[in-house]
Image 1 (cartoon, rainbow, N blue to C red):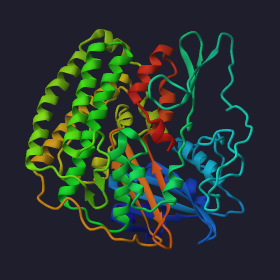
Image 2: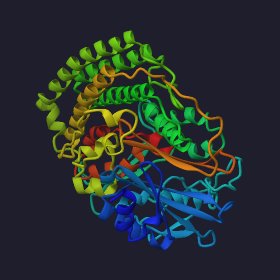
Image 3: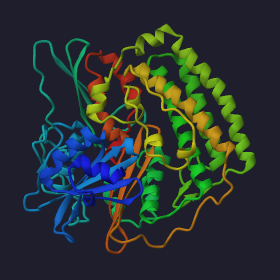
Image 4: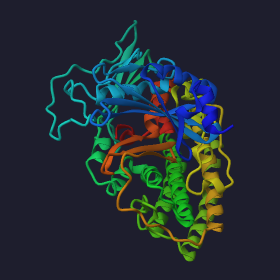
Length: 525
């Protein structure tokens, strides 16, 4: 049975209602009232995981808004986008967040930026907008004025009140030490044990999705790689993949191999830095310094090979901008051999130290069911026993032809998230050696058309180091960008951190937070 027939049968609709516009991407148009039933069937019968939910303003062309749900169907190696027209006069649709908590923030974001109410949502308050943003100023509607928005007096964010004798609130942030971006954490504590944690993010909301609509599509690649500074390759590739699929561009095999190298190097230097930072947070200075030295060695190598420490400007439409000649491949192999020995010593030093394992074992547990319910993705999900990875489930670039394992840990604690990082680095080394040993002899880029097809849409995806990055792009009648929906893994994973902290003590929060290491900038966009 084809994927179209399988999905149609699960949804209880005729096969002609489900379309495969592009390989690995199915679409289905539902009524707004049917959205909860479609979500239930997709999750229960198809094993679907919600990876994005967003709206588009199509009043000029179709007279409606449209709400879209994007589901990963790993068993069939395809995605399903469910779309439903929303009457502008009603400006509401039935929420799925009560049964599918992964939709919680997505639906509230649609409410913030489009003014569409998710009826039946368990917590219908602002998530992306702060309270000094005026009512009825919906920034992602097409008629939103291109002018500064005057701020208004607003009530303080409605944090959960303190209840109970001896219960206190401890505020942390939004300004933090160092160079990290702002985010407000508010702990409810009874002594040192944490009873609950509340978040307030979006202090650095940059209007990225709106900016995509107001710039030429070629320039959007620079904006994409700026979404989250530590994921420049991941977001640039997701954006490029979407446009390449939209325009039917075939990337040369060598370019796909080089893109795989870029992604795995980005995974390695970030995981290495995080392992060192975990040691820093428990005052274990020797492995902390070794981790940062290993990370620095990798980014210096990237500068040597690609002309940029964080590999910005290397991804291009239709390929890449820099090649690796034979001597550069040999240089990379030699560095990986040296790195592997030092990395193994670092991990051994950490897990053999009782003073370290005492701080990470059983700390910040995110259980398997909670991770599944919340829609947690990437390495945080795999540390909680959720076997998911787009490199295997939705292969992109050169991954379909590579041999590698997807590490999964069951503990769901800080140690499990540390070990996922360590095991993923091992797999990255395996992947890099396979790619280097079988580097195709083709061009590194192909010709890109001057114009995108009009009234078209496509999804681009990447399993970046933190988790999946997805970019959905639609064009207008002129072939210019009409809508870009960016989903960073941090947007899906912040609720997981909120769930993992209660039951621990306040001094454990830094190490729990670092074990997730979520991006403020990627979340806020």
